[in-house]
Length: 258
Image (cartoon, rainbow, N blue to C red; front, side):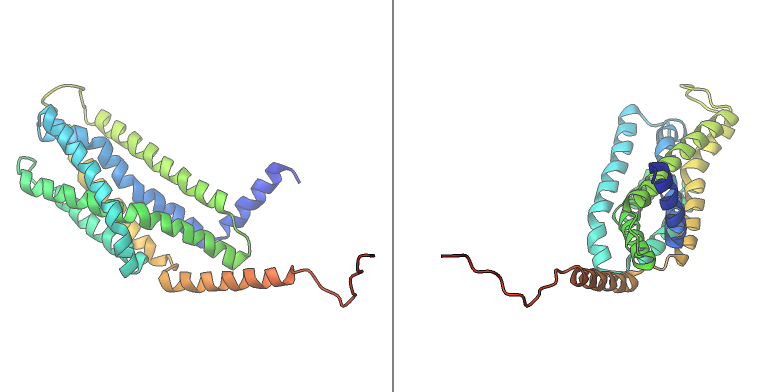
């Protein structure tokens, strides 16, 4: 069989996995807010907050540090709570907090930084370890339901959607800045550009978070179901191993001659 034929067959097989199709959609929706907010943060700090170069550096570093903290505390949370419920709740909270950013006065640093810190911590809790664990669960589900494990294509599809989220976010930022009349390095941008930057910093991520929270309702691989799948897969592997065990006969072995 040609490699292309095998690839197309695998693609058709994985397309039957409804949880994988849902997963790649959630992946796109989940990385999009971070990419678009990350791309526009420097514009927000420069032209909306009118911050100094030193503060802009601090602002960007703060976001990265909060992301790292969120990733670190994800494991204790998922050990205690069902990761799908946790994922959905966090996305709803992120949507609400992102909406709140629209109303925050950029000159009021305390509420702005508070929201910024919480958003960046929560985002990496659900977009880091939880999201990748969900991808792994989808792979197990495909093996359990269809008897075929397609790990490579499964993760490749999610990585493709991750890169697609990056590309789409970058394109939207460029298009909105151009459409609203952004002029590079001009200290005072026009009101349309300022509103466009604030919208990309708050409202567009909000929409993506809320849609992600809605779609994950149809993701059925919660902790209880995954435990059942793992048990069934272990039983299947044990049965297959027994079936492949060598057969022994009662024929005596020939003794070496003396």
